Image 1 (spheres, rainbow, N blue to C red):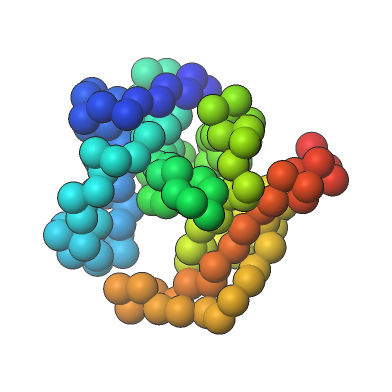
Image 2 (image 1 turned 135 degrees about the horizontal axis):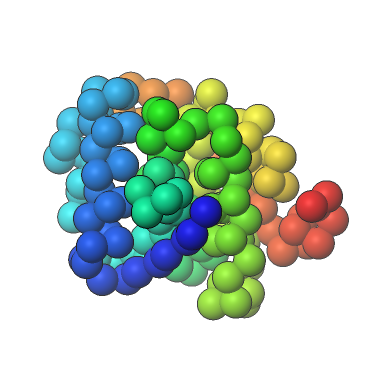
Length: 149
């Protein structure tokens, strides 16, 4: 899989939008206005390509707390091939994030186990976002050091 990233609203970003539209808007029924909330221009977008086709995406925003990972999505036909794991391992290993105190995200409840395999742990209270149960998860750099690769 080839991974590309961008902080521009360019073709890579358009590929990320396409995946997110398929997964979040069409599959999960999230409103287009909720999914595309106007903050994409502040983020770095990661897209994984297989045979030139965009199959997996995530976006990151650097905050005071650390690196906020959002909008992790894999095209339905490309699931269960490890693409999201490859993309996130690439993202977590980016030198530009090495000084961040932690990575954090809001995981849909169905994805908790997936994020745990990447060294994330739950914290805080569960919450609902757009009618979907979520939990907060984080991975500190010390957790990354002890994570089995």
